Image 1 (cartoon, one colour):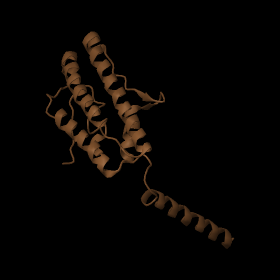
Image 2 (spheres, one colour):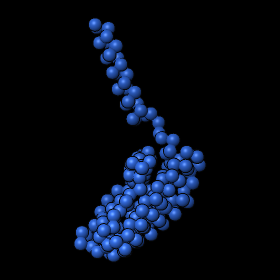
Image 3 (cartoon, helix red, strand yellow):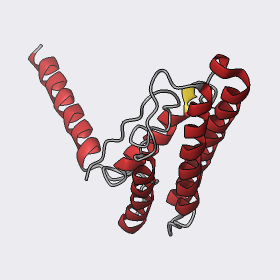
Image 4 (cartoon, rainbow, N blue to C red):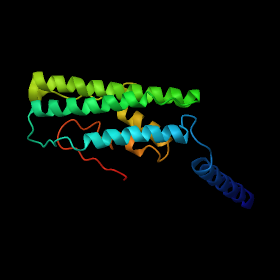
Length: 178
């Protein structure tokens, strides 16, 4: 009986060590950008956040036309951010592919926001925002933010929450790390 307990205890200890190693020192994601590219991506996101923050706030009583106008301005800023991100060219293929996929997701989200702005103008309060989904299930913003998590804390401003990218109605709140 003692041999079984010892074996179980050793298994548990080995499992804890393996999990600890994988979380702390187990390496980095192959999609991870090098420091210079991560700084460039973060700089582009911060510039977008700084451009978005001073736009006039909306409240719950905003008209559909006011909301559409705000979305147009935000989409222009987010689109410009995506264009600036396209100038970032990681040396390794895996981070480059992941960055292109992330930017493609941004483009899909901006297009959905643009469609919603158009619907606000034609359908008014009956318009509904439909966020694109990854594999038809997961909200695309979740997938986008997963890539940001892979980058560590170096690109936090690129999180869709930091840029309020999913917020299409009501006030926006931009939290900066600066």
